[in-house]
Length: 101
Ligand SMILES: [Zn+2]
Image (tube, rainbow, N blue to C red; front, side, top):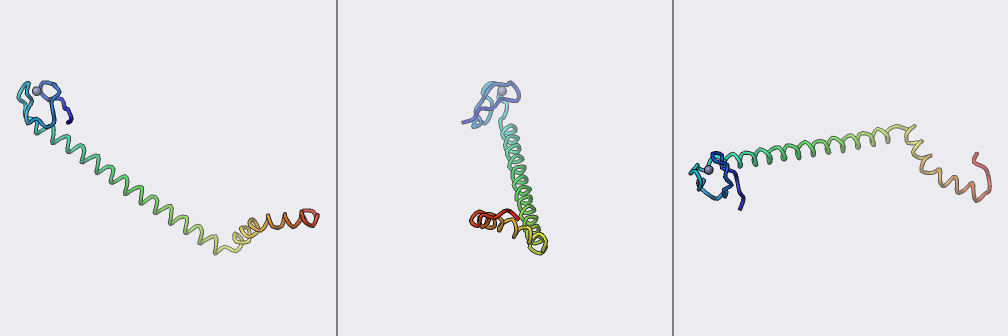
């Protein structure tokens, strides 16, 4: 059970009360505004979630486009191939006792 301040006298009263027991101020109005604030917050949260999912989709599309452009770029592919085959080359150099050349 939540307590709200009476808009008229400021006394803390139950949200379940139909009217303030102190001054008789009807409690419908403050409860409605509370609902509106909650609804507004919920709408804002939903909008944020929408933006967040759109942002994630955008990032995913960018990553896919980047990967595709790398796969289509022979120079980049050669660099990646060198990068991943380099450790094997180093191992080979160690086993044969040869230099880095
Ligand atoms: Zn009151």
